[in-house]
Length: 561
Image 1 (tube, rainbow, N blue to C red):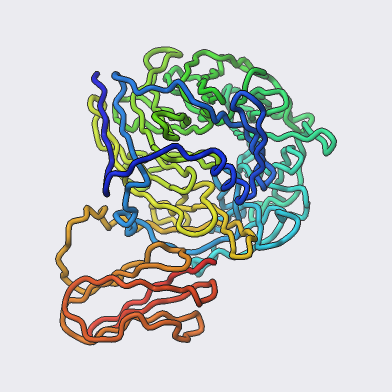
Image 2: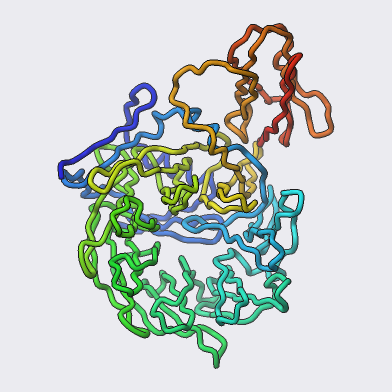
């Protein structure tokens, strides 16, 4: 197969130069990260929420291949307004989770309304994080605070699973010392707030962290397993629940002291009815562990991507319809003077054998600030889309080709427009309408330098096609969602009218007081755009209203300073 390159340029061509490391590290410091050079271009990055990651920031041996189809994307040259109508801001929930993970969401109390579990941090609040809090969607479709776990050492919710196979869901939370705490319920209609057991590997005097914990029955013996990576011994640890001790016990360890590793996507990727566990390393190595029998795990395949930091993993369910599931690995390199994020797709080529089938390269995206990758059928058409958050971008990539001629296009893209940064994305059908909402967890930096961590939830508007940039005819009245949203200090509002008349477009606070008059005059039929500058307006949620003789429409906007 010849090398196929699809290059996405949706505005004028930009010239890129490698971001100066010193400038990048200054940005990291402003965002609360502590970076320590370990030598040989390896850096220890300590994030302000208690997580440590090791990154390779030297030049890699990555080179484009002439055999693997590849899409090349320059995000900074793309006008995100082309995609702004796909999703609209719904609400903010003041919880958050660590990078490289998804928010924990479930209906633990079986009342039909989902809960979101996460750490909380408001501007200037000490300690840095409060314990894990729970917010539940109520009958008015708003998330409401339900309770907060009492232990100060609680850090992040990590998963919901029926550990004991008793049809009762349990909650896994990791602590500031790196241990795993399991909570259970007292009745079917309650939350899981009772401590059941603690899986302890660390103490305050010997701290560590359990990275990327995953729960499941990996060796298919009917008993729950937990796997995780741990930096202290540098290896993947696989535990099994023991009913007698009411705790997990290690049944297998795969130690790799020469490097740092992480990730995990899990499935039967070579279709041999055995569980495959995929993970990657700091130097671009990718490994597949197979559960070959009860408690019997071993590395059956490995490769090197020629890049670094292969920590980002997900899987898709036969996205190209050739009968094979796929796993994806995200890694980084410096190529041609640019920082590049690579998403590499693998499929089975035989028993315990895998081959690259596609690559998507994003130039100018920096993984220093973290992110995650996942898959979801966002448009409910039976095929997964590839979703990822990295740096200040969120992308949804849609498969548009065939197995013989694979290709992907940008289905949705957004970029951070306010002080702070994105840290991850989760998709979940919160209102049970068959289409998942998009939850972007992030932090926001206020003018005084203080930080707030929270999750912005966006609802899909999937009937709106991607804007192609072609001028559309005006068949009626319409008020668009402002963009960007949230914003600081300016945002743009588009609207259309179909007949001559007097038009007003005004902004109001939540008490109904007029904040700004943006339009107050006669207009001809057509499409218009107006900018709202909120430099002198305090942070908050506002409404803007378009009024004509024949039409009125109101929408919300969010100002974050």
